[in-house]
Image 1: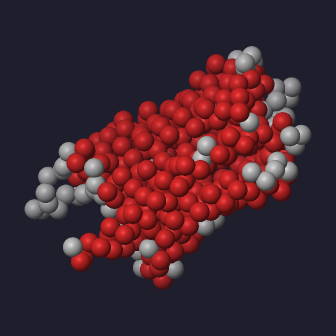
Image 2: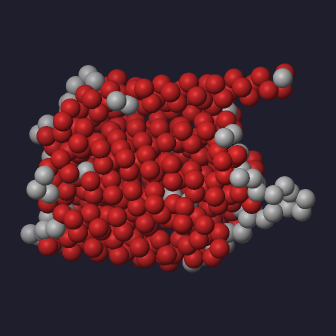
Image 3: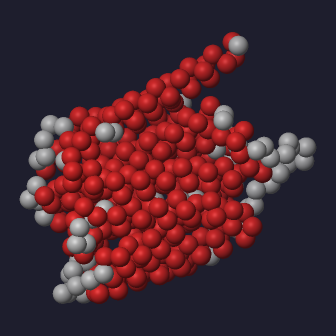
Length: 400
């Protein structure tokens, strides 16, 4: 933590504010994870569509990624994040109205609008790195993601305690409570002071996006982030529904998701230090192995112990693989290329998340819990191989 204390005051302030805003956004995401499939199952005539609302939220994240990044390049991070917070407020209010009206498709519209909020908020981690010295970037990214601990602690608890707040409209109170988190995020965003990207004199012109994307470091970084988030989301999204079908109550699934979220974000307090000490490749490989361990545990049964322990492993593995992938992405671009490359990264990552969210309920409905897990294995093995290949390539480079 000594180097963290040597970070400029502006960087420390930005990281703290962005970490809190990430946590506030995460509270909404946690509520969506815990309750959206249950709300979808309650409102939809076709129960196979239960996870579609969450999938549409992630689809909106994907669609918003590129325009959000390019807009923030023009108007600045603070203005862009403010627009996102307003979208979050509107989205949650639409969800409340949908539940009261008993409309599945209006609920889908609300989650989609909320996804626009997330489309802006996904850049919190990159915004923290924007003003940081190169040696502090991994820590800045990691500490912002650590704000998710706020979501892990408060999100499921708020979901449980507000479920019947607007009785007899079950779950409406949970979404109504989220409006306050968007308002608070909007307020905190006004205190950000993030410098625009500076192009140094004599620096080469921005390269074509295709050339940047063809770099081995970009390919491995983005594919690993896609697999980390995709596999995690594929398993996590359907977990509350799987637990419900196994006879577990809403409080049980909320607790499992809460500890899963803690496993996702608590390690962020030291993931940056691990990357600095052991190298990004080793941390990413550990993440892939932990996610494979999650699959192995899930294949042993569907008891509470299996759901609980596997989701812990899933969260920890996601943290190592995703933080490592995000750190690698920052090595692939120059300042003038930042907005386009970050946008492409999140377009690909959250396109994967949207696909897994919308398909997980269908796969579970047709094939069951075992196939949800088996389908993840080839992707995790591929990520493990890609990271190992990049590490070997880098190690051999000086001798070439």
